[in-house]
Image (cartoon, rainbow, N blue to C red; front, side, top):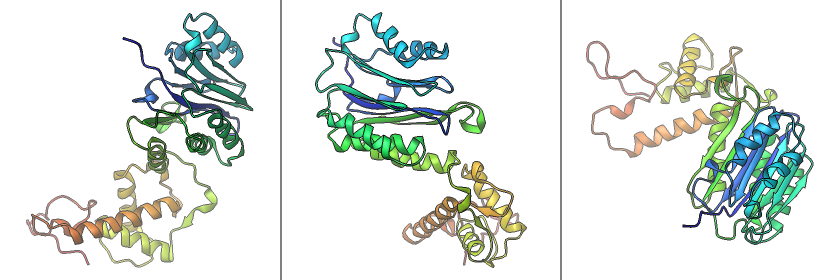
Length: 329
């Protein structure tokens, strides 16, 4: 049985400002993120596709870790591979130098474009406009590496992308100690394995990942928690069952305790501050969550009396006497 080919378009890139290396990829193939993207902090990034040789991943990163250039890695991997004519490869090294390879027998249209700090490559595409649009968009898009890589994927899809259609997408970005609790280098590691619109779904997942796992917001946007901001937070925390009092606009210790409980239970520890300021993203998230809670109480018929009158942040069950909690106002 012939092995599957990856009709795929991808970009590998290096961001010198953020010291980050990454790969973004889309394909009409199940779980493209499990095969194509490879990256290592302070080393480089690599995409192996078409009749993908997965050995290119670990072997290529090992060569890059030895200080070899992207062009040297591409030459070394392909020259010793008897199946190179059906391979496609993009590499960016620790300095941001990029190189790519498209085998002569890759299915049409196949090709690549190399730019300053990045390489775009694709096969079984609608045409060369796919990788050209990716390259121009990456060059012109402001922001950091996640924003630019996602923009490049969207641009490739707008030009037709994989001519067989869409199925999966992935975004892998590494930077030193960029992972959860600084315990790994996987700064961004998300995948959409099967979806009719995988790039848009990847963007949706990234927005949640960004809110929960990353700290990319501009500190200049921080809001002091007082007045209307404090009152809005108290109201929304109250709807969700975290804050027992009435919204007053005074950010006191019960308010701080309620907010800390919400932050910890909803995995926003990276957004927690001790200066009585709050990120706008958390304000928006709380407002949306409170609105959804109101809709839940309004439209859902409870089986257990009073079950919907207490938010998810409230303590389980009644008080020590067994009395039911009073309805929220």
